[in-house]
Image 1 (cartoon, rainbow, N blue to C red):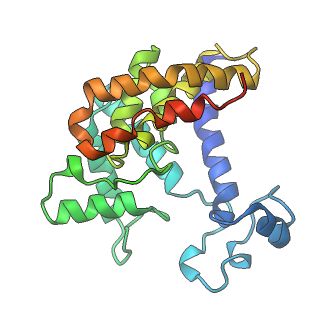
Image 2 (image 1 turned 90 degrees about the horizontal axis):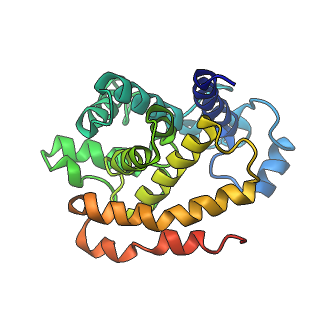
Length: 242
């Protein structure tokens, strides 16, 4: 498959999966089965969220997961690489592009975007605006890093850098970089014949090196007390079957 087709497929697949799962985000598997009988189509979110109108979305509409992914892809192309300030600016523009909405055009963005907005309004250093708890918000948008760069080290560095724009917990940044690395391996065709377990093992083996890069190149962006959490991502990955 041509490389460009793989890139298109990665972004399109992300958007489709995001839209498919949007109505049931936050629900447990049993509840999803009870409400919808499974997920094989774009469902009406009002079935699950009749008492929470703010959760309503048109069936097939993707969320901030895809919005932030597209913003990152746009920034990478425009800046010919990762420019954290430019990417951060796109996220802020999204938040201010729709009047009358708390988070602007963002569709269901979490605490990281809220913190970024608050810091910008209060003229706080935006490099220190992200929450200090681990979440998947930086990992969900990391795919473009694995599609844009042509070597693994650059992919990991960009995966870490884009994560730290909104997430200061090192675990969030490391897992985002590993997600970008996985996309890179798949888009390049290196994993075409690899078994799923073998792919996970490779990521587990890469985790310590990713943490070392974070400590070496990005330590100034992580609060000192949080550096003690370094090692937990690699330790968790080592629990995978060998």
